[in-house]
Length: 486
Image (tube, rainbow, N blue to C red; front, side):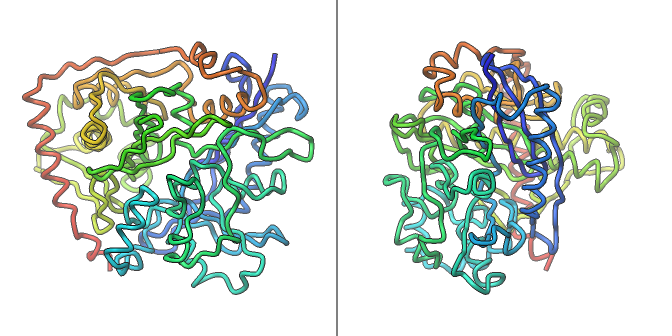
Protein backbone atom coordinates (compact mmCIF):
# COMPACT_ATOMS: atom_id res chain seq x y z
CA UNK A 1 0.00 0.00 0.00
CA UNK A 2 1.22 3.51 -0.86
CA UNK A 3 0.84 6.38 1.61
CA UNK A 4 0.69 10.13 1.04
CA UNK A 5 0.90 12.82 3.71
CA UNK A 6 -1.24 15.94 3.56
CA UNK A 7 -0.23 18.99 5.57
CA UNK A 8 -3.41 21.02 6.09
CA UNK A 9 -2.55 24.35 7.70
CA UNK A 10 -5.79 26.17 8.54
CA UNK A 11 -6.93 29.33 10.27
CA UNK A 12 -7.36 27.75 13.68
CA UNK A 13 -5.22 24.61 13.56
CA UNK A 14 -2.60 22.58 11.74
CA UNK A 15 -3.26 18.98 10.72
CA UNK A 16 -1.31 16.20 9.11
CA UNK A 17 -3.45 13.47 7.57
CA UNK A 18 -2.04 10.33 5.97
CA UNK A 19 -4.05 8.75 3.16
CA UNK A 20 -3.57 5.45 1.39
CA UNK A 21 -3.96 5.01 -2.37
CA UNK A 22 -7.70 4.35 -1.91
CA UNK A 23 -8.15 7.81 -0.40
CA UNK A 24 -8.72 6.38 3.08
CA UNK A 25 -7.36 8.02 6.23
CA UNK A 26 -4.84 5.86 8.07
CA UNK A 27 -3.53 8.38 10.59
CA UNK A 28 -3.92 12.01 11.59
CA UNK A 29 -2.92 14.58 14.18
CA UNK A 30 -4.18 18.11 14.80
CA UNK A 31 -3.04 21.01 17.00
CA UNK A 32 -4.73 24.40 17.42
CA UNK A 33 -2.72 27.61 17.48
CA UNK A 34 -3.28 30.95 19.17
CA UNK A 35 -5.50 33.61 17.62
CA UNK A 36 -3.78 36.94 18.36
CA UNK A 37 -6.23 39.87 18.38
CA UNK A 38 -4.29 43.06 19.25
CA UNK A 39 -6.93 45.54 18.04
CA UNK A 40 -10.52 45.43 16.75
CA UNK A 41 -10.42 43.98 13.23
CA UNK A 42 -6.82 42.78 13.60
CA UNK A 43 -6.08 39.03 13.46
CA UNK A 44 -2.54 37.62 13.71
CA UNK A 45 -0.79 34.26 14.01
CA UNK A 46 2.66 33.33 15.28
CA UNK A 47 4.32 31.73 12.23
CA UNK A 48 6.97 30.10 14.40
CA UNK A 49 4.25 28.45 16.49
CA UNK A 50 2.63 27.15 13.30
CA UNK A 51 5.93 25.65 12.11
CA UNK A 52 6.59 23.96 15.46
CA UNK A 53 3.06 22.58 15.44
CA UNK A 54 3.69 21.30 11.92
CA UNK A 55 6.60 19.20 13.13
CA UNK A 56 4.45 17.83 15.97
CA UNK A 57 1.47 16.88 13.80
CA UNK A 58 3.65 15.13 11.22
CA UNK A 59 5.32 13.09 13.95
CA UNK A 60 2.00 12.40 15.68
CA UNK A 61 0.17 11.25 12.56
CA UNK A 62 3.01 8.93 11.55
CA UNK A 63 3.04 7.44 15.03
CA UNK A 64 -0.73 6.83 15.01
CA UNK A 65 -0.48 5.21 11.57
CA UNK A 66 2.50 3.12 12.75
CA UNK A 67 4.54 4.47 9.83
CA UNK A 68 7.99 6.00 9.36
CA UNK A 69 8.86 9.13 7.36
CA UNK A 70 10.30 6.94 4.62
CA UNK A 71 6.90 5.22 4.18
CA UNK A 72 5.46 8.39 2.65
CA UNK A 73 5.56 8.55 -1.15
CA UNK A 74 4.99 12.31 -1.09
CA UNK A 75 3.63 15.24 0.90
CA UNK A 76 1.07 17.77 -0.28
CA UNK A 77 0.52 21.16 1.34
CA UNK A 78 -2.79 22.98 1.59
CA UNK A 79 -3.19 26.18 3.52
CA UNK A 80 -5.21 29.12 4.69
CA UNK A 81 -4.84 31.59 1.84
CA UNK A 82 -4.04 35.36 1.81
CA UNK A 83 -2.42 35.17 5.27
CA UNK A 84 1.05 36.75 4.98
CA UNK A 85 4.32 35.80 6.64
CA UNK A 86 7.44 37.98 6.45
CA UNK A 87 10.73 36.33 7.34
CA UNK A 88 14.49 36.69 6.99
CA UNK A 89 15.76 34.24 4.36
CA UNK A 90 19.17 33.92 6.06
CA UNK A 91 18.07 33.36 9.64
CA UNK A 92 14.77 31.72 8.70
CA UNK A 93 13.04 33.67 11.47
CA UNK A 94 9.73 35.57 11.13
CA UNK A 95 10.06 39.35 11.21
CA UNK A 96 6.59 39.87 12.69
CA UNK A 97 3.39 37.99 13.41
CA UNK A 98 1.60 36.71 10.32
CA UNK A 99 -1.34 38.89 9.28
CA UNK A 100 -4.37 36.65 8.78
CA UNK A 101 -6.80 36.76 5.87
CA UNK A 102 -9.59 37.94 8.21
CA UNK A 103 -7.62 41.04 9.21
CA UNK A 104 -9.10 44.42 8.14
CA UNK A 105 -6.38 46.86 9.21
CA UNK A 106 -5.56 47.94 5.63
CA UNK A 107 -9.09 49.05 4.69
CA UNK A 108 -8.31 52.78 4.90
CA UNK A 109 -5.09 52.36 2.90
CA UNK A 110 -6.97 50.65 0.07
CA UNK A 111 -9.74 53.26 0.03
CA UNK A 112 -7.18 55.92 -0.90
CA UNK A 113 -6.28 54.17 -4.17
CA UNK A 114 -7.30 55.97 -7.35
CA UNK A 115 -10.26 54.56 -9.27
CA UNK A 116 -7.94 53.73 -12.17
CA UNK A 117 -5.62 51.72 -9.91
CA UNK A 118 -8.57 49.90 -8.36
CA UNK A 119 -9.84 48.95 -11.81
CA UNK A 120 -6.37 47.82 -12.89
CA UNK A 121 -5.94 45.63 -9.80
CA UNK A 122 -9.31 43.95 -10.28
CA UNK A 123 -8.78 43.36 -14.00
CA UNK A 124 -5.31 41.88 -13.68
CA UNK A 125 -5.69 39.92 -10.43
CA UNK A 126 -9.39 39.02 -10.60
CA UNK A 127 -9.87 40.27 -7.05
CA UNK A 128 -11.93 43.19 -5.70
CA UNK A 129 -10.34 45.89 -3.57
CA UNK A 130 -10.48 44.51 -0.03
CA UNK A 131 -8.11 44.03 2.92
CA UNK A 132 -8.77 40.28 2.60
CA UNK A 133 -5.96 39.81 0.06
CA UNK A 134 -2.23 39.60 0.72
CA UNK A 135 -0.69 42.59 -1.05
CA UNK A 136 -1.97 45.32 1.28
CA UNK A 137 -0.88 43.21 4.27
CA UNK A 138 2.64 43.02 2.80
CA UNK A 139 2.65 46.79 2.36
CA UNK A 140 1.58 47.31 5.98
CA UNK A 141 4.33 45.00 7.26
CA UNK A 142 6.87 46.75 5.09
CA UNK A 143 5.94 50.16 6.51
CA UNK A 144 5.37 49.17 10.13
CA UNK A 145 7.44 46.11 11.06
CA UNK A 146 10.36 45.56 8.68
CA UNK A 147 13.49 47.58 9.37
CA UNK A 148 15.85 45.72 7.01
CA UNK A 149 14.57 44.27 3.73
CA UNK A 150 17.90 42.97 2.41
CA UNK A 151 16.97 39.32 3.09
CA UNK A 152 13.21 39.78 3.12
CA UNK A 153 10.88 36.97 2.13
CA UNK A 154 7.16 37.55 1.77
CA UNK A 155 4.95 34.52 1.38
CA UNK A 156 1.62 32.96 2.07
CA UNK A 157 1.64 30.16 4.65
CA UNK A 158 2.44 27.48 2.04
CA UNK A 159 5.70 29.23 1.14
CA UNK A 160 6.65 29.52 4.81
CA UNK A 161 6.06 25.80 5.39
CA UNK A 162 7.80 24.76 2.17
CA UNK A 163 10.82 26.91 3.08
CA UNK A 164 11.09 25.22 6.47
CA UNK A 165 10.50 21.72 5.09
CA UNK A 166 12.80 21.89 2.06
CA UNK A 167 14.72 25.18 2.00
CA UNK A 168 12.96 26.11 -1.28
CA UNK A 169 11.20 29.47 -1.76
CA UNK A 170 8.19 28.86 -3.97
CA UNK A 171 4.41 28.95 -4.13
CA UNK A 172 1.77 27.65 -6.53
CA UNK A 173 -0.58 29.43 -8.91
CA UNK A 174 -3.61 29.09 -6.60
CA UNK A 175 -1.98 30.85 -3.66
CA UNK A 176 -0.29 33.41 -5.90
CA UNK A 177 -3.68 34.28 -7.38
CA UNK A 178 -4.86 35.32 -3.90
CA UNK A 179 -2.09 37.83 -3.26
CA UNK A 180 -3.49 40.51 -5.63
CA UNK A 181 -0.03 40.60 -7.23
CA UNK A 182 -0.28 37.84 -9.87
CA UNK A 183 -1.59 38.41 -13.39
CA UNK A 184 -4.28 35.79 -14.05
CA UNK A 185 -3.39 35.57 -17.73
CA UNK A 186 0.41 35.33 -17.50
CA UNK A 187 0.47 33.39 -14.18
CA UNK A 188 3.40 35.55 -13.09
CA UNK A 189 3.96 38.47 -10.73
CA UNK A 190 2.77 41.62 -12.50
CA UNK A 191 5.07 44.66 -12.60
CA UNK A 192 2.23 47.19 -12.45
CA UNK A 193 0.61 45.50 -9.47
CA UNK A 194 3.95 45.22 -7.69
CA UNK A 195 4.52 48.95 -8.22
CA UNK A 196 1.10 49.90 -6.84
CA UNK A 197 1.71 47.97 -3.61
CA UNK A 198 5.44 48.89 -3.45
CA UNK A 199 6.55 45.26 -3.41
CA UNK A 200 9.85 44.09 -4.92
CA UNK A 201 9.68 40.95 -7.07
CA UNK A 202 12.82 39.62 -5.34
CA UNK A 203 10.92 39.40 -2.05
CA UNK A 204 8.39 36.97 -3.52
CA UNK A 205 8.55 33.21 -4.16
CA UNK A 206 8.79 31.50 -7.54
CA UNK A 207 5.34 30.57 -8.90
CA UNK A 208 4.89 26.92 -9.93
CA UNK A 209 2.01 24.62 -10.87
CA UNK A 210 -0.12 23.02 -8.15
CA UNK A 211 1.15 19.49 -8.79
CA UNK A 212 4.90 19.04 -9.26
CA UNK A 213 7.92 18.37 -7.06
CA UNK A 214 8.69 21.61 -5.20
CA UNK A 215 11.56 20.18 -3.19
CA UNK A 216 12.45 17.37 -0.80
CA UNK A 217 12.55 17.14 2.96
CA UNK A 218 15.72 16.24 4.84
CA UNK A 219 14.45 12.65 4.72
CA UNK A 220 14.17 12.80 0.94
CA UNK A 221 10.35 12.89 0.80
CA UNK A 222 9.13 14.95 -2.17
CA UNK A 223 6.79 17.84 -1.44
CA UNK A 224 4.85 17.47 -4.67
CA UNK A 225 1.71 19.60 -4.34
CA UNK A 226 0.66 22.98 -3.05
CA UNK A 227 -2.89 24.29 -3.25
CA UNK A 228 -4.81 26.94 -1.38
CA UNK A 229 -7.33 25.26 0.88
CA UNK A 230 -10.46 25.97 -1.15
CA UNK A 231 -8.90 24.90 -4.44
CA UNK A 232 -7.65 21.76 -2.70
CA UNK A 233 -11.20 21.04 -1.58
CA UNK A 234 -12.37 21.23 -5.22
CA UNK A 235 -9.75 18.60 -6.10
CA UNK A 236 -10.78 16.52 -3.08
CA UNK A 237 -14.41 16.69 -4.22
CA UNK A 238 -13.20 15.66 -7.72
CA UNK A 239 -14.68 18.82 -9.25
CA UNK A 240 -12.40 18.66 -12.27
CA UNK A 241 -14.96 19.60 -14.94
CA UNK A 242 -16.48 22.92 -15.94
CA UNK A 243 -19.71 23.68 -14.07
CA UNK A 244 -18.94 21.55 -11.02
CA UNK A 245 -19.20 23.28 -7.64
CA UNK A 246 -18.48 22.72 -3.97
CA UNK A 247 -18.85 24.71 -0.76
CA UNK A 248 -16.51 24.26 2.19
CA UNK A 249 -17.85 25.16 5.61
CA UNK A 250 -15.01 26.12 7.91
CA UNK A 251 -14.12 29.23 9.89
CA UNK A 252 -15.50 31.03 6.87
CA UNK A 253 -17.49 29.69 3.95
CA UNK A 254 -16.05 29.26 0.49
CA UNK A 255 -17.96 28.29 -2.63
CA UNK A 256 -16.31 27.69 -5.99
CA UNK A 257 -17.56 26.80 -9.44
CA UNK A 258 -15.21 25.67 -12.19
CA UNK A 259 -15.20 27.73 -15.37
CA UNK A 260 -12.67 25.38 -16.99
CA UNK A 261 -10.03 27.01 -19.15
CA UNK A 262 -12.23 30.11 -19.54
CA UNK A 263 -11.31 33.14 -17.43
CA UNK A 264 -14.72 34.57 -16.45
CA UNK A 265 -14.64 38.07 -14.98
CA UNK A 266 -17.31 38.54 -12.34
CA UNK A 267 -20.00 41.20 -12.63
CA UNK A 268 -21.63 40.24 -9.32
CA UNK A 269 -18.98 40.68 -6.64
CA UNK A 270 -17.20 37.33 -6.95
CA UNK A 271 -13.51 36.56 -7.17
CA UNK A 272 -12.04 35.25 -10.40
CA UNK A 273 -9.31 32.88 -9.31
CA UNK A 274 -7.03 30.10 -10.47
CA UNK A 275 -8.64 26.75 -9.66
CA UNK A 276 -5.54 24.64 -10.22
CA UNK A 277 -2.81 23.76 -12.67
CA UNK A 278 -1.92 20.08 -12.57
CA UNK A 279 1.62 19.72 -13.86
CA UNK A 280 1.91 20.64 -17.52
CA UNK A 281 -1.86 20.56 -18.15
CA UNK A 282 -3.58 23.88 -18.96
CA UNK A 283 -4.54 26.11 -16.06
CA UNK A 284 -8.15 25.88 -14.88
CA UNK A 285 -10.08 28.86 -13.50
CA UNK A 286 -12.99 29.30 -11.09
CA UNK A 287 -15.39 31.84 -9.70
CA UNK A 288 -15.35 32.01 -5.92
CA UNK A 289 -17.55 33.52 -3.27
CA UNK A 290 -16.05 33.98 0.16
CA UNK A 291 -18.02 34.47 3.38
CA UNK A 292 -15.90 35.72 6.27
CA UNK A 293 -17.83 34.30 9.23
CA UNK A 294 -19.73 31.00 9.29
CA UNK A 295 -18.25 28.30 11.55
CA UNK A 296 -16.63 31.02 13.64
CA UNK A 297 -20.14 32.38 14.35
CA UNK A 298 -20.90 29.10 16.12
CA UNK A 299 -17.63 29.46 18.05
CA UNK A 300 -18.79 32.95 19.02
CA UNK A 301 -22.05 31.56 20.42
CA UNK A 302 -19.93 29.14 22.44
CA UNK A 303 -16.99 31.29 23.56
CA UNK A 304 -18.35 34.84 23.76
CA UNK A 305 -22.09 34.41 24.46
CA UNK A 306 -21.84 31.08 26.30
CA UNK A 307 -25.24 29.84 25.11
CA UNK A 308 -23.72 26.48 24.13
CA UNK A 309 -20.90 24.50 25.75
CA UNK A 310 -19.69 22.84 22.55
CA UNK A 311 -20.17 23.58 18.87
CA UNK A 312 -22.07 20.32 18.42
CA UNK A 313 -24.76 21.52 20.85
CA UNK A 314 -25.97 24.19 18.44
CA UNK A 315 -27.92 21.63 16.41
CA UNK A 316 -29.88 20.35 19.40
CA UNK A 317 -30.59 23.87 20.61
CA UNK A 318 -31.65 25.14 17.17
CA UNK A 319 -33.84 22.07 16.62
CA UNK A 320 -35.82 22.82 19.78
CA UNK A 321 -37.74 25.59 17.97
CA UNK A 322 -39.66 25.18 14.68
CA UNK A 323 -38.32 28.43 13.13
CA UNK A 324 -36.19 31.47 13.86
CA UNK A 325 -38.99 33.35 15.62
CA UNK A 326 -38.37 36.38 13.42
CA UNK A 327 -34.71 36.66 14.45
CA UNK A 328 -32.00 37.25 11.82
CA UNK A 329 -28.29 37.16 12.63
CA UNK A 330 -25.77 38.70 10.22
CA UNK A 331 -22.31 37.84 11.60
CA UNK A 332 -20.36 40.58 9.82
CA UNK A 333 -17.71 40.62 12.54
CA UNK A 334 -14.94 41.66 10.13
CA UNK A 335 -17.05 43.14 7.36
CA UNK A 336 -18.87 41.38 4.55
CA UNK A 337 -17.15 39.51 1.75
CA UNK A 338 -18.89 38.35 -1.45
CA UNK A 339 -21.02 39.65 -2.98
CA UNK A 340 -21.01 42.91 -0.97
CA UNK A 341 -17.36 43.59 -0.12
CA UNK A 342 -18.23 45.99 2.69
CA UNK A 343 -15.34 46.25 5.14
CA UNK A 344 -17.43 48.87 7.02
CA UNK A 345 -20.13 46.32 7.94
CA UNK A 346 -20.45 44.89 11.46
CA UNK A 347 -22.58 42.15 12.93
CA UNK A 348 -26.23 42.52 13.91
CA UNK A 349 -28.93 40.39 15.53
CA UNK A 350 -32.32 41.91 14.73
CA UNK A 351 -36.03 41.13 15.08
CA UNK A 352 -35.80 40.36 18.80
CA UNK A 353 -38.89 40.30 21.02
CA UNK A 354 -39.46 39.14 24.60
CA UNK A 355 -40.66 35.83 23.19
CA UNK A 356 -37.28 34.98 21.68
CA UNK A 357 -34.85 32.59 23.37
CA UNK A 358 -31.28 31.46 22.88
CA UNK A 359 -32.68 28.69 20.67
CA UNK A 360 -33.92 31.26 18.15
CA UNK A 361 -30.49 32.89 18.10
CA UNK A 362 -28.87 29.48 17.56
CA UNK A 363 -31.23 28.72 14.67
CA UNK A 364 -30.64 32.19 13.20
CA UNK A 365 -26.88 31.51 13.31
CA UNK A 366 -27.32 28.30 11.27
CA UNK A 367 -29.61 30.09 8.84
CA UNK A 368 -27.02 32.87 8.46
CA UNK A 369 -24.54 30.30 7.21
CA UNK A 370 -27.06 29.11 4.64
CA UNK A 371 -28.31 32.53 3.53
CA UNK A 372 -24.76 33.78 2.96
CA UNK A 373 -24.02 30.68 0.90
CA UNK A 374 -27.14 31.26 -1.21
CA UNK A 375 -26.06 34.84 -1.95
CA UNK A 376 -22.74 33.57 -3.24
CA UNK A 377 -24.25 30.77 -5.34
CA UNK A 378 -26.81 33.16 -6.85
CA UNK A 379 -23.96 35.43 -7.95
CA UNK A 380 -22.08 32.45 -9.41
CA UNK A 381 -25.07 31.38 -11.48
CA UNK A 382 -25.51 34.93 -12.77
CA UNK A 383 -21.84 35.22 -13.78
CA UNK A 384 -21.37 31.76 -15.26
CA UNK A 385 -24.78 31.15 -16.77
CA UNK A 386 -24.73 27.71 -15.10
CA UNK A 387 -27.74 26.66 -13.02
CA UNK A 388 -26.76 24.31 -10.22
CA UNK A 389 -28.88 21.25 -9.52
CA UNK A 390 -26.72 20.08 -6.65
CA UNK A 391 -23.85 21.34 -4.51
CA UNK A 392 -21.15 19.19 -2.97
CA UNK A 393 -20.28 20.17 0.58
CA UNK A 394 -17.53 19.51 3.10
CA UNK A 395 -16.14 20.94 6.32
CA UNK A 396 -17.15 20.76 9.96
CA UNK A 397 -20.67 22.20 9.70
CA UNK A 398 -21.70 19.39 7.33
CA UNK A 399 -21.90 17.16 10.42
CA UNK A 400 -24.84 19.36 11.46
CA UNK A 401 -27.75 17.67 9.70
CA UNK A 402 -30.19 20.47 10.51
CA UNK A 403 -27.88 23.03 8.90
CA UNK A 404 -27.56 20.96 5.74
CA UNK A 405 -31.35 20.54 5.52
CA UNK A 406 -31.75 24.30 6.00
CA UNK A 407 -29.19 24.82 3.23
CA UNK A 408 -31.20 22.66 0.84
CA UNK A 409 -34.47 24.35 1.83
CA UNK A 410 -33.05 27.87 1.44
CA UNK A 411 -31.40 27.17 -1.93
CA UNK A 412 -33.93 24.76 -3.39
CA UNK A 413 -31.32 22.25 -4.62
CA UNK A 414 -29.78 18.96 -3.47
CA UNK A 415 -26.89 19.14 -1.01
CA UNK A 416 -24.44 16.22 -1.34
CA UNK A 417 -21.87 15.16 1.27
CA UNK A 418 -19.05 12.70 0.49
CA UNK A 419 -17.88 9.82 2.67
CA UNK A 420 -14.48 11.47 3.15
CA UNK A 421 -15.24 14.99 4.39
CA UNK A 422 -11.59 15.96 4.90
CA UNK A 423 -11.63 17.05 1.27
CA UNK A 424 -9.13 19.89 1.65
CA UNK A 425 -6.45 17.51 2.88
CA UNK A 426 -7.57 14.82 0.44
CA UNK A 427 -7.25 17.24 -2.50
CA UNK A 428 -3.66 18.06 -1.56
CA UNK A 429 -2.95 14.33 -1.31
CA UNK A 430 -4.53 13.70 -4.73
CA UNK A 431 -2.44 16.46 -6.33
CA UNK A 432 0.73 15.20 -4.65
CA UNK A 433 0.02 11.63 -5.74
CA UNK A 434 -0.58 12.70 -9.34
CA UNK A 435 2.84 14.37 -9.41
CA UNK A 436 4.68 11.21 -8.32
CA UNK A 437 2.56 8.65 -10.19
CA UNK A 438 0.42 7.19 -7.39
CA UNK A 439 -2.59 7.92 -9.60
CA UNK A 440 -2.18 8.16 -13.36
CA UNK A 441 -4.89 10.76 -14.04
CA UNK A 442 -7.98 12.51 -12.67
CA UNK A 443 -10.31 9.85 -14.05
CA UNK A 444 -8.72 7.31 -11.72
CA UNK A 445 -9.20 9.73 -8.81
CA UNK A 446 -12.89 10.25 -9.63
CA UNK A 447 -13.53 6.54 -9.02
CA UNK A 448 -12.37 6.95 -5.41
CA UNK A 449 -14.97 9.63 -4.51
CA UNK A 450 -18.11 8.26 -2.80
CA UNK A 451 -21.33 9.92 -1.60
CA UNK A 452 -22.44 9.58 2.02
CA UNK A 453 -25.66 11.61 2.17
CA UNK A 454 -27.99 13.82 0.11
CA UNK A 455 -30.39 16.43 1.53
CA UNK A 456 -33.35 17.32 -0.68
CA UNK A 457 -35.37 20.52 -0.55
CA UNK A 458 -38.55 20.40 1.58
CA UNK A 459 -39.60 24.05 1.19
CA UNK A 460 -41.78 25.79 -1.38
CA UNK A 461 -40.60 28.62 -3.62
CA UNK A 462 -42.82 31.26 -2.02
CA UNK A 463 -41.54 30.69 1.51
CA UNK A 464 -37.93 30.52 0.25
CA UNK A 465 -38.30 33.93 -1.39
CA UNK A 466 -39.98 35.49 1.64
CA UNK A 467 -37.28 34.28 4.04
CA UNK A 468 -34.49 35.41 1.73
CA UNK A 469 -36.02 38.89 1.32
CA UNK A 470 -36.06 39.29 5.11
CA UNK A 471 -32.45 38.17 5.32
CA UNK A 472 -31.36 40.74 2.73
CA UNK A 473 -33.13 43.50 4.68
CA UNK A 474 -31.14 42.42 7.73
CA UNK A 475 -27.89 42.60 5.76
CA UNK A 476 -28.50 46.25 4.82
CA UNK A 477 -28.63 47.10 8.55
CA UNK A 478 -24.97 46.10 8.94
CA UNK A 479 -23.58 48.72 6.57
CA UNK A 480 -21.37 51.53 7.93
CA UNK A 481 -21.45 50.21 11.50
CA UNK A 482 -17.65 49.95 11.76
CA UNK A 483 -17.62 53.55 12.98
CA UNK A 484 -19.19 52.32 16.22
CA UNK A 485 -15.90 50.54 17.02
CA UNK A 486 -13.77 53.63 16.48
